[in-house]
Image (cartoon, rainbow, N blue to C red; front, top):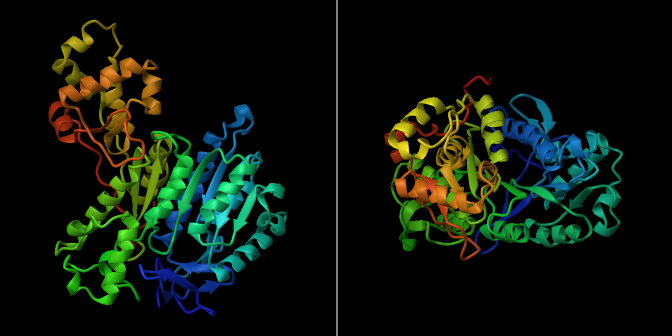
Length: 460
């Protein structure tokens, strides 16, 4: 019997997961092959692990400062649902590294990683026992007792936490008191979804000012499960009338309440629209929720099986990681075209529309307004921007000139004010590209929506 994300089959003993508002215990048996957890292959788990396995070293080389400074800046990868570190792909008969395994391979199998910390959290007893065995077999140089011990006496740079995710945040805070975590990635890869309260708590410890850079979240959501159901889970009801819900539907509604942190989503999703429309609406709602903490939210779609879809939400306040994830790691593997609008044609149209912006400039010099606009068009996910964006600061270091350029773009109609629920009260205005206006005025089309690689497609 297939489990979530292909986590299926009968295991002895079964793993226990807690779901629902009333803390009902549901047995979700996991299957293992040797010490590897059995998951879906091909276009699901294998592709996801491969993308993250490529992204981790790319991210670390940048955030550690690179070879020019000896990789000495502190960094951390925190896997909140580490599983066993290995994945057995049943349909291919292969064992590969899971996301936790890729983090360990970077830390223990590479060079110059002394300042990299890896924190692995796993609550399930069976998974944790197998994770220990995988580490002992693959990276025997790591003393497990020290990695599991008190953070003040841990010199390994690897921390193993056998604890529930909601209890891991204080443990991570304690580690941070004794070891600088620096710039960090937090991966939330649960069976189906992670509660907003956990995301909120983890983000609040790290992002203490308006869109502070230095922290990235990668969050798994099994999108289609909520509308199709799976095993012991029911699909969401198609009505917001609670007296018409079954007991199982009530549990799923409670799960989404926790996922989004409120009940305001219910009128938008508890209705008889097509499943595809409701899935897209959920992705948009969750992305807007994540904007509370992050400028850029990139939902990567995966299709492990026909009619199934899940998303990895890559969240950052620094555009480089988002751009690389989309263009270098996801698009080439999934047959999505990279976004490459024509800058010369766009600038020619801009010149004609706004001659006063360019008449005083020397040849080949483009005005700040166009340079900021093009950067947002070309490289900012969703066209999101504000005066504190790191790449806009490189275009123009003067805060006042950046602000005036954004205000001019707003007044002309290229961008529009977009305010999300956030944690900081008064802050600099945030904007979103007005794509219909940009397309009509400059002839630049928005990037096509990302599509998942389907199970029947051949990978590049």
